[in-house]
Image 1 (cartoon, rainbow, N blue to C red):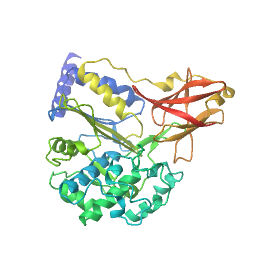
Image 2: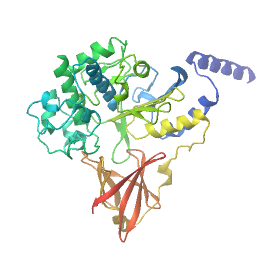
Image 3: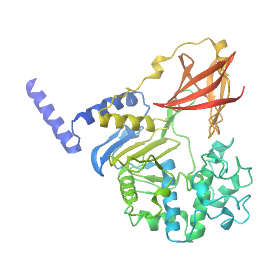
Length: 441
């Protein structure tokens, strides 16, 4: 028996050495931290940590394709969702630095007949303060995403819809604004959005595994996306025709390409004078945090760079949830030697509630920036209907006026009870809570 144990340990040592995995504290803690998520089929993807662009930790987890049991690897290609916006923002600012565009330019310069286009600036489109309605919040969005569109056809979907507010008055996340930015890039450069990115970013930076995605493309090492259906079963992500995502979420990429892109960007090798015009910075000089994230059917990602430590944490996932940010925060705590909470299996914490007592939670709740969610009792279960969805998702009761929203992997906590109803709903992602006020019973 001892002989075979020695052979097994030797084989394990060889495999570990070949894969380049170390067994230091960070490796062990990250593996242990992620295991519950993997066991619950709640997440799969890549975690990477870089100091001064030198890898501290890089590892892929779970499957790129569950049916074929194809594992994720460090060169797996993911749809990067709204991280695509960073490429669009950079393209706009490159045109600004070339003197071909100004952030103060009005939309009607590029689309003369756009309603109120004389009030909307390029800067407002970049900063989500234009007031143009968020395409994803349309009631028929789940039908819209199944169709092929030209850029002008997408713009026609929202151009004649009333603005949510006067331009520049407040913030409201809007993919529609980034469709317009893609149009502006094409109008100013004379190239298609895809051609511009190819000529000015992908080719010069040797981003050979990055591009504009479509259902027609055959991509080696492509990750398939997964999600939980309304009943809580793991399924393939819903189909989305990527043409509707142009400007705001249409790209695919790899860990290596994103690392190269970010490294060149933050070191002012792409943008010079306009780098800080990117809407991704927060904090003070010397202690700034640069972050970008994205979530699209089947995928959820988070990239965070902390300037004080020259530290980058990348989370890429092929599972539709809200786990990328909490995982990123906890990975930082593990790296820093801070306390962190182990993942909770909320499914096992389910309690039974009397159906008649669920009505106190019903209502429509507004987060102020979208989405507006409807909470309703259906077939003796409390459910949540997200904007653009046709079927409500069943919530798992946890007690103490809290419910687990499995499909997004968040906790919903009802607060401020007024007689027979609640007026506030907290959307809790890890340590972050986003309150929504009831606007309708």
